[in-house]
Length: 189
Image (cartoon, rainbow, N blue to C red; front, side, top):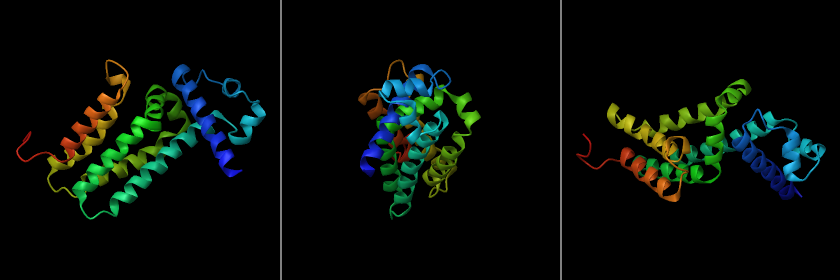
């Protein structure tokens, strides 16, 4: 029974996110979400009372994923390899469920600001940025490590690309991120 409820919750999140990305947060109603799901508003209310609850749940899900990555990374002995694996894992998130949420967040910044939804994720991103540059004493190396995260985000965001992100653009973003985080000796200095 619990699995069924989780499946329904994820389905609601997916449909709502599709509508939010397609039409914008403000132009999407709970009624439209319910209709697209083929359920009543009452059934939707069972899982989420408001659109805001849906948005907060999406951001919290990403936050939990980021927390898990940072926690894993902190337990590793080799900081360079840990940073590289963090980048690979975040790239996987961006190519999966994280990508549409990032697009939603980019396109709906005023609504997110009003909902105070970005603060939770911003704290987690700061922690991730801190981790990426933590073991570097050279400010240039610290910046490179942190810019590696930015490369992943920009390289997978259609706002910054001529077309929608593809597997090739995701591979390029990851390659650039890895090069930034762990440059070859003498490269770019």
